[in-house]
Image 1 (cartoon, rainbow, N blue to C red):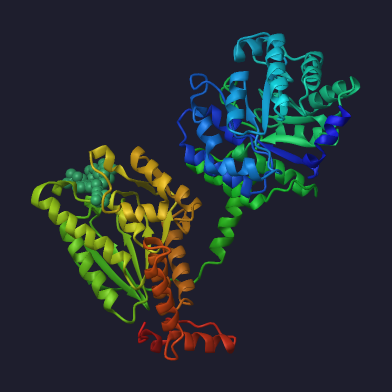
Image 2: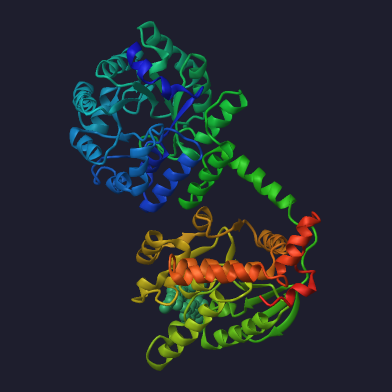
Length: 600
Ligand SMILES: CC(C)(COP(=O)([O-])OP(=O)([O-])OC[C@H]1O[C@@H](n2cnc3c(N)ncnc32)[C@H](O)[C@@H]1OP(=O)([O-])[O-])[C@@H](O)C(=O)NCCC(=O)NCCSC(=O)C[C@@](C)(O)CC(=O)[O-]
């Protein structure tokens, strides 16, 4: 046993090691299917937050756990494959119920597997339809095959305190399973309070019993569910008795199918907070982790199960609000039609779609008014930015479906094509301020812009496939911003993609909780952009555009050379920007009238 522990010494470098089980144990109880990219996004974010052990998935039958039917896609994803090959410090265990599952894991280059056995007969029968002894035999077969291939094996014991059918679990039966898992070569045994019924007094009693029978604390881990709100207290008690590894799930994801209404695993954020407050290192960045918990909770449309995570997110939102400008911007109306409103505030022009009764559908008349207003703002040398927003419940419901065929379709095509191109090729900085759901062409409108801010409640639906259509014209903007696999999945599923998801990918810069907050975010952004020169912004946009459309071509090289030449001309904006820099002053480009006349 001692030798086993020595082999794993690097694993115990942090004072407390956390095994994140959210992507497997947490998600497996959720009924609605979660897209694979979301699961991979979760895994990537957990790793970025500093978690060094993330349980990826479980190789189970799709009939038993439909949610994990994409286990092979998870394991074979390029990201996971790269980590498996290159990141030796990162542990990515995969749960396997039998040797067939082990083979699948081996085929994907997995370096660590987990086996599970119930401490009690009734749960074993209900969960995996066999006795505890048979469960141990299966685990032993997996462990010996895995070890012969050089894999590390972790063992789970479930129902350490109680079984949903037979009541309290005697410590002797837990010892029986723990000692057998140690014998078969598991480097660590995770003690699972599957029902979440245990309290610190029971933790003390069980651990003392196990230690009295010679089990070393360093080979044990705690896996506590929070049904009765005791998980953190149990962890603290276990820590005080020498346990240094704990399983947990970001956002408290999970649940117990045998305890209706039961909470899930203890939340990773809460565990990290507990130890951080005690000055005990976990190696996890709590702020980033709280953002991951908030992100996945929004994705799953469920309350954040982490108390510490929710508190940190609320605190961050409060401090963001406090840093917002106190003085609101004044917008004066410069043009109105039945379809749109146009306002101006300093160097900012704003076009508001104003057909709320029609969901701000992109009718030919609205497009025509929009283009006219946009052209005027584009030609106005005093305008540096153009904001697109909307009135009413919807930001924009896309192409006018009443004009989908024949001559009307051709007119629609021409009008839409020109509309999106005009925004995309604008020399001004374009900002979509998205205050309601967007469909089809509405997403095109937002994605053709340079920067997006949004209400958190907003959804983005590429609904075209449901209508027998495809997002033809807008596809290039969606692909550019959202990337190929995510665009394909969103187009094919026609699902409502949340603003939170887009925010997590950086496609939306800021999400606001209320309309008032969104207005403040816009003010804040516009204030910040006053320090970006109009010419420098225009050139930057050109660089991004050509880098996207013609990367590594002679054309790109020529464009880079041309822009470099232009930006270093003595009469260019840079003459002012650099002179002010040398005087240690930041330029407010909106105030500098001469800059508007720049030839750039
Ligand atoms: C948005 C909800 C959920 C609101 O659902 P709701 O809140 O129940 O309201 P509603 O459905 O009563 O809508 C209010 C009014 O807006 C109209 N409306 C609303 N949307 C459109 C539309 N697109 N075309 C024509 N009319 C539309 C709708 O017909 C109705 O008019 P009313 O009956 O009162 O006269 C519902 O109306 C809806 O599902 N609309 C369709 C949204 C959609 O699927 N948009 C995608 C359009 S296809 C597209 O954009 C193609 C494109 C541009 O991508 C192609 C390319 O890129 O090449």
